[in-house]
Image 1 (tube, rainbow, N blue to C red):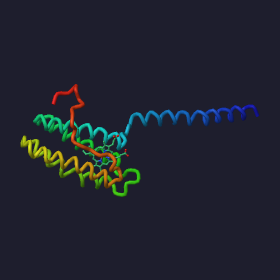
Image 2: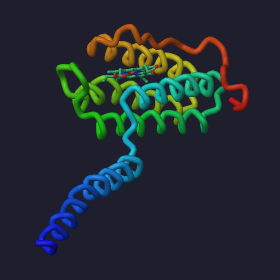
Image 3: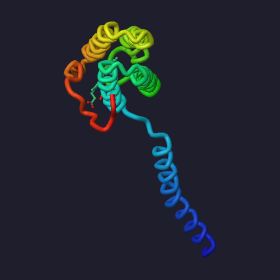
Image 4: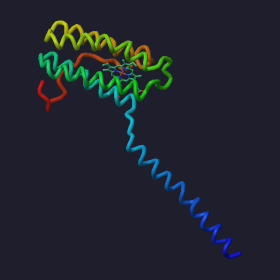
Amino acid sequence: MQQHSIKVLRWSLVLILLPACTANTHQAGVTDNFTPGLGEIMAMSATRHAKLGLAGQAQNWELAAYEVDELLEGFEDAVKYHPTHKEIKRPLTELIPEYMDQPLKELEQAVKNKNSQAFSAGYDNLTAACNACHQATDFGFNRVIRPNFNPFSNQQF
Ligand code: HEC
């Protein structure tokens, strides 16, 4: 009889402690595989968009090329981590390439050619495409514009 209650007690302990252990592993897993939200990726894209504009204005083509690349990588992450999003009816795997591929390709070319005029036109196209996608996804209140001053006082453009 006593043997039996010890067994029961042992099992109860295992059952009590087990969820605590799995909860810990789960938490560690979450921190290890941090996934940025779409809003975070977008806020980062807005920073890159601003820096790209400032770099192009200053004809700093090396930096402009870098920022175009960063934008491309950010949108790759958006598609990878958020193939669909909230109530948006169409998948981001379609929307992102549809709106971003052409303007970013044009900008890449303008930067390669160090062509200020083509850059300026391409930059307005990109900005319009950001806003077109916001409209299409019912996030049209996020209106992107050309930066009209330089908020990055610790970076040289
Ligand atoms: C899929 C089409 C799509 C494209 C293309 C797109 N966005 Fe977004 N954007 C969204 C969606 C959806 C959200 C809202 C995400 C959320 O749920 O927080 C968003 C949110 C934002 C926000 C708000 C984030 C914040 O916290 O302030 C900014 C800024 C933004 N986008 C900038 C841009 C810029 C700049 C570009 C172009 C270089 C761009 N977006 C291209 C769909 C898009």
